[in-house]
Image 1 (cartoon, rainbow, N blue to C red):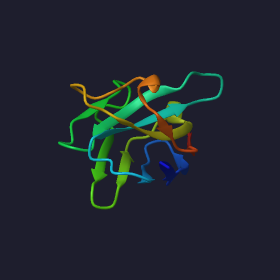
Image 2: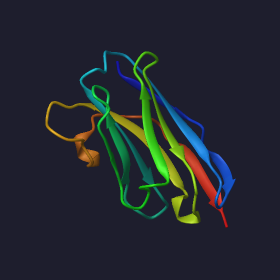
Image 3: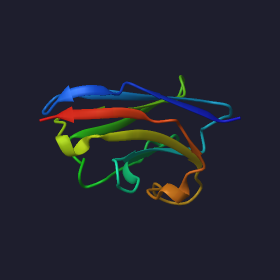
Length: 126
């Protein structure tokens, strides 16, 4: 079965950087899209970034555009989220998710994704 395992979270000061990793296994992902979402306490899960495994098209939330970069390593079945210029409001549990995607563009809604990881905590102190 499909498994997604996130890593790389932690505590960082505002302005710092972290790189999250997501290891995917269980099937061939060449026709999938992979997304990163986050959820802060008391808030809904929100879209952060997504990438298509084939072609590498990306999409970002406005709140992270220019600070975060999503990338994938097809050979390793890994997806990364490089987070620079972190702000206290970036504090959340970060989840990776994947879905088979044949439509145009890149999915951005949580309901578009079928499989989710367990999440990794990112805490940004001011």
